[in-house]
Length: 294
Image: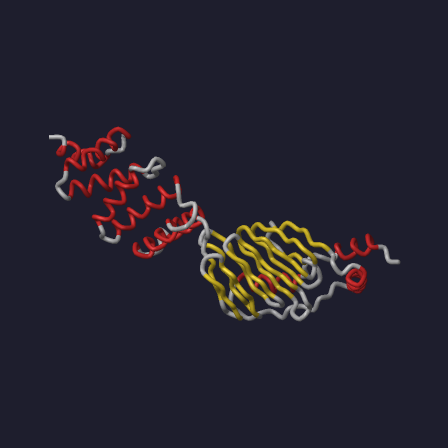
């Protein structure tokens, strides 16, 4: 009877990816371009013999690996990844679940070998059988792009997608804090109307309460002002200032004070101006306070 421990040790010593496999996965992470030929799954006669014996004698070899470095890694004989971020691999060599938390993960699954593999993020899941693809999770959500083959993407927020070579999909954040991070990442690069739509969608999510809700509403007041809707911006600013967990209070008081002064409403502007004075942040609005205090 074969010595399982010796077989496992021999196989484990051969789990570092070859230069060719690393280059193939690096091409996935880099994006479109000519795909390097994926190497035949070889690693020397001793490794091949050990792998064959191992899978005959122990077909459900377990995988339990932390993925937290930039580089190539073999997860059994038919799956290789490049992990540039934080994640974890769990399951068996023929039925893997990768949990991905942040950064970019490149995956290559040898096709037609019966390997079942999924990648789970807080925003969705990707299921494949024989393909090359990349998953990036950041403040914008979970982005999936396919280099070759086909994947099924199920977004918790945003529906399901079947992607083929060259296809991509984005699963949006599913919580209010996650949506707030997305808004902050997009704030300087989208139009005020697009930002307002993101904010409205975020405020409709579960757990959009407390400081998260106050921050989203403060940002919404600014987006409304940038879009030229002064009346709505004023109403949103003053309603947000009434919240117990208000954030950006100085910004909101300044916005409300200036809109009130512009409308000739010194009585409405004074509470905001005096709040700024008390906070020591009156600055350029000192003259407005003097004028409205007469």
